[in-house]
Image 1 (tube, rainbow over the protein chains, first blue to last red):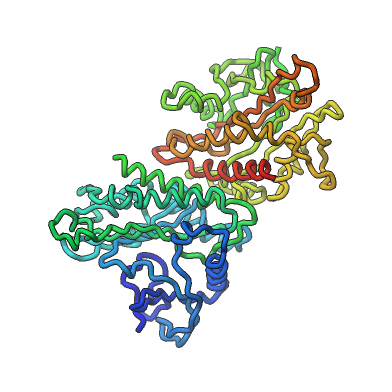
Image 2: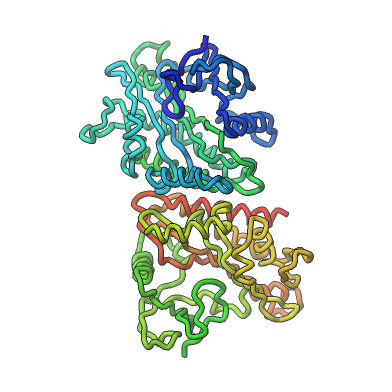
Length: 289
Length: 289
């Protein structure tokens, strides 16, 4: 029994008869192979990456597990279509707060068509991609005061300038009710537990950075970093309930969206690495403030 | 008595009645203030940087010393014009081998005119700027077999693809006669002394990289890394002449060309940093091969 993912914050959404990813109740994520070269390219990447012995284990864990491809009933009612079968990275969370950040100071790359180049660079210049080397693509935060999710509006997210992006990264780890108004500044209550610590987001990003400084296998064009954590469990801590206290925050970084990955051909992915370093500096600044 | 610099490998050259930099015999480099905003911007940068107490001393040494501005007789005969007075970074070398590498995966930046954007991105895509995050702008090598300098042709340098750039970085530290033919592969005889070692090029680049990971004062758009060394002195080593044996290689990295530097406004220079990391990887690869 496949259904529309509850916690997707960016990309094609399988609703209103559109084609989009689906999930099952076994922790699997079914992503339709896009009809053009992109679907083939993403499948090719997963095949290569999942069997690449030169990629160390501590790096493999930042990518969704790949279970091959499978024909399944598509979300748009067009019958059975090939889907990538991936790990559903949020399936083990009760109320995951999720943010999708597209990394890189450009989303185009050498040898694309002029049409694709123009489309990409226009969006790169209109968002923070050029200025920051990354752009927030979407996020949702579990609001435990109201016991429901708050989701950032796509239109608002895509209009962020430098300060908008900074504010979003603070909102993402705050316990006061999210809002689109600037008059209730985010309190960053979860920052030290989610972004900080030996197994927090920053530590994971630094591990990825070290790999990107040397790896020349892949260029991750137009690829995203997904950040996930369980903020409810933080609130339970110290509440006197031992069983609940054991629940970890499980802040997690995953790389997703590999439709535009190219061979590195002996050159590091300086576009991803530069953006990653900029993103890391933003996270560090929040931890220090 | 000002004269045309002997060891300039890129940028405007003061010959045939054109406006360009001049040097004196006291180790000073006179760079004419370009008429438009660029000259003002470069002077503004030097004023800011030379007095910026937040920039550590070990970073200041990677920039030419700034001695203010001065009216001097211009190289194009148009009378006295304002010039930046800078340290002539090659003045203390006998036969300096010099390479100019423009760092960054783009030379344009936010808020430039469409005309400037189009001019820059065309060149960025035609050179290795987009693919490598840097491009070689020019270089000369002292050829001690012939006891003269060999200078790479500008047209050839600007047509480099990935392998051309890699070859140039090998040629730059080789003792066999440079040539534009691929049939005499560079021997990289000086690589370990120039690129390697505790005070070599790589060590200096890594020190710069660490600073770029945190500094948010300046964005070094369209700025170059100049690499200089004395290769004659390497050959003297072990030659039995004690006085000459003491001559160091003095491999040196300097940042130059700040006409397009902008305020960082709290964001790291991910464009420069990404390109620098890519450049570092190329140098490491040569040292390892």
